[in-house]
Length: 265
Image 1 (cartoon, rainbow, N blue to C red):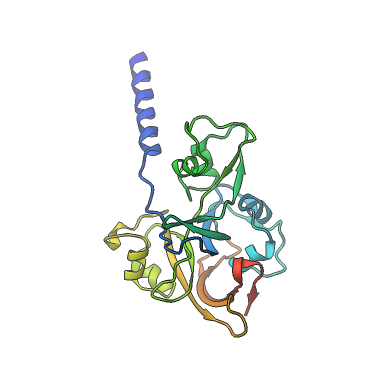
Image 2: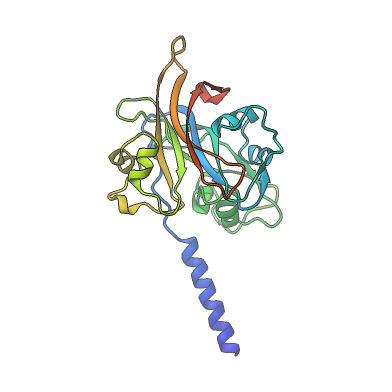
C-alpha cells in the first residue's frame, strides 16, 4: 500500500513536470521595430465573473473599448455577468521589438498570497502566456520564487505588421475544438495560406484547440485621418444564453490609434 502511494506520487509529479515543460507556441512575428498599434486577443475566464473584473485584470482604460471590441451595446453595465469560458475579446496596445510583438508593458499583475507563476499564466490568464514567458520578461531567475505584492508584466502576444501590404489589426483568436484553418480563414475574411504563414505553421493539421492564432482583420483608411482605419470584422455575437447557438454577425468597427475610443457604424 505504501509503495503504491509512493508510485502514484511519482507519476503525478512526472505528469506535472511534463505539463510545465510543454513547448510554447511560436510567437507572433513583428518586423516593424519600435512600432505600436492596437491589437485584440481572446480571453476566457475559468469562472463566472463580471465585465469590470476583466477590464481591471487586463487594465483596459475605458469600459467602452471593451464593449466595442465585443459588440456589446454601449449601455451595457460594467456589472454584466460573463459566464465561465465565455470568450471576451481584449483590446490592448502592442509594441514591437526584436522581431516579435508583446503587449506594451501591460497588463501588470500583482502577486497574491497563494499565487504561483504557473497558476498565474495557466489559470488567471487562461494560458494566453506561459510561465516561462512571464519569467523571461520580468527577469525572474527562479520561477518558484515570487513574492506577495510583486508586480509582474504579462506579455500578451501581438503584432503590428501589415499583411500583404495591407494595414490590419492582429487578433489573437483562441481556437475552439474542431476548428479548421480553412474555416477560420473563411470566417475572418482571410486565406489559409496567410494564417499558416503568420503562425509559422507547416500544415493546417498543426492547428490545435486552445491555440492562440494570429488572425489579421483587414480594413481601409477613412477620410480625414491618417491614423484611423475602418475594419470589417466578422465576430461571433455573444448570446445571453450560453447554451444557445452562436450567430455570426458582420460588424463595422472604427479603430482609432491605440483604441482610445470606438464607433459602431
